[in-house]
Image (cartoon, rainbow, N blue to C red):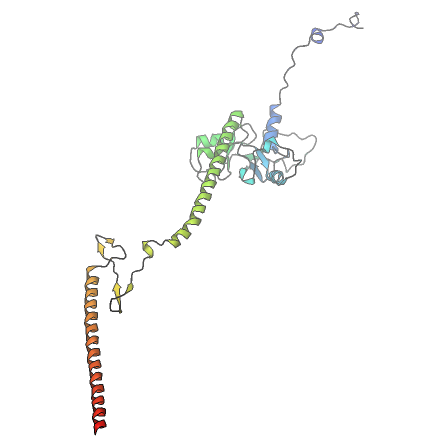
Length: 307
């Protein structure tokens, strides 16, 4: 039955206090975040990509996740913010010459050094094992340590020379505060890209509608400078030459006739009137001669009848 003298219970066996919080092994957490894919939980292997929140993935795992359109697809918190392959950046990593993890055969008695990493910072030489803060640039994908960017301040990438801004720097596997800042930047960036796409669509629609209106109503540039024919009162066609007169470097409006053109038109009208009067006189003289001939022929026939 217990407590009969055979056993001596201790206090911690009789009094139950609050449970102790289980502490996560820091080394195991660092290994899981820096050596394994956040989506497939497999070892990181090239090509390696990173999202806008600073998480590391295998590129083939991201492609398989995006291609899976099945209804029973399990939602992943680690990749819920990735909607397309454009949301990730392929990393340009620098190999660590002192690392020989894949070269040696793995045996039971082999010591696995957690401090050694596969990649290093190309500027300072720090190993990317989680002990130091690392970041990458969205424009080119080059990876550097945060110490290198702080000590050597520049607006150009130290490795490839691509210009970048402060917003393009994304911290890899940052803490909660870093993730919140990166998430806010990601939302602002995506909202800005949506607004730019809408503005481009509006501009393309306006440019497509403009050529039709321009053809219907041609502007002054399409006005022709040349000869414009009009009919005079006498039935003859005369031509008026339109010229451009410059006044202080400004060309005149098409359709206006200068003084020289007006004097030439007056002369042409006067000449046409004189010609028309000459034609009338010739016609009257011709008709009178014809009448005299007819009268003579009638008089001859009349006199011959009496004789």
